[in-house]
Amino acid sequence: MSRRRIDIAKPKFGDEEWQALRGPLESGWLTQGPEVSAFEQDFAKRHEVGHALATTSCTTALHLALAALDIGPGDEVIVPAFTWVATANVILYCGATPVFVDVDRDTFNLDVSQIAQKVTKRTKAVIPVHLFGLCADMDGLRAVLPDTVAVVEDAACAAGASYKGRPAGGFGDFAAFSFHPRKSITTGEGGMLTTTDDDLAAKAEILRNHGASISEEQRHYGPQPYILPDFNLLGFNYRMSDLQGAVGRVQLGRLDGFIAERERWSGFYDEAFADIPWIRSPARPEAGQHAWQAYVTYIDPAQAPKPRNEIMQILHENGIATRPGTHGVHMLGYFRDKYGFSPDDFPAARDCERNSMALPLHNQMSQEDYEFVVSAIRSL
Image 1 (spheres, one colour):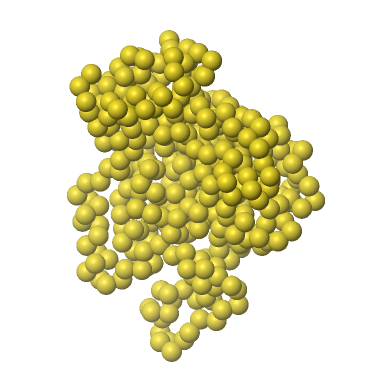
Image 2 (cartoon, rainbow, N blue to C red):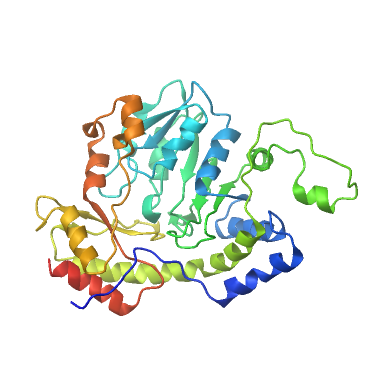
């Protein structure tokens, strides 16, 4: 094989994104303003929710959701043990306690059959993660949850995903999306909080802007320039800039095309690996759309020709970037030391961390790139 360089992920931009920046730069309105507002409206419409609030990241969107739900010390929040660390961190930001549940090895998403035994009188919320773009089993989750327990979708990877014909973002009290560069659409950093609840949306909007009783737009465009906001809530500065909002609007317009392209090439991978017993392709939804933030395989250690890490090293030496799927959070130093976890406490999450392998799948790849990845895998 001739050496190439194939990144694990790479954002795709065009002249439209460059041109979109002109408006905020020429107007001088660079912080949250009209471009962010338009991006929020477009995102809410695409995901069929009543409200969308742009934030600085998915992490701050998740924190904002928990704060708006009044989650704090003494409360428990159930979270999958296999996820990016931010999903658990935001619970600690609120002074609450994360309660981990193991995941399904086939889908990488939380195992809903284990939820009921984790619910206590202190359980205030569950954060199901739509990991890598595959929606969690939301019907199964709701079926085992008391009505008093809130649901906050971690949809970081799931812009454009759907579950049984409905877009991600409207299945819980809140949902949080990411626009990090490894996601299918990006604003550099950035996130979006969605909800169908008018009251929760109003509270989250206030909390996002320091707890101010009126928005910056109201202050600057209103008829009374001497008005200052009152602050009745302890809030945060989680506002997105209008530069990001302008880019986000263009990227959102490309979302469905991006997903369609990734869908096609994920099928190419599936077919290419179908006769290789040691590499398992990602699960697909029975009724819905995978967002394909990443193509994450599972390497069977009993059948693979080499350990997962050695396979990744060989691919790296041939110019192919790979990554583990994500963390077994209970195995990370902070959580291990704080709560006394061992890897075997959540064996599926343990195995998924050790054996998952994400392959390059993004909208900057050529057919030759995909064929090269397949050839490298098959040569093993």
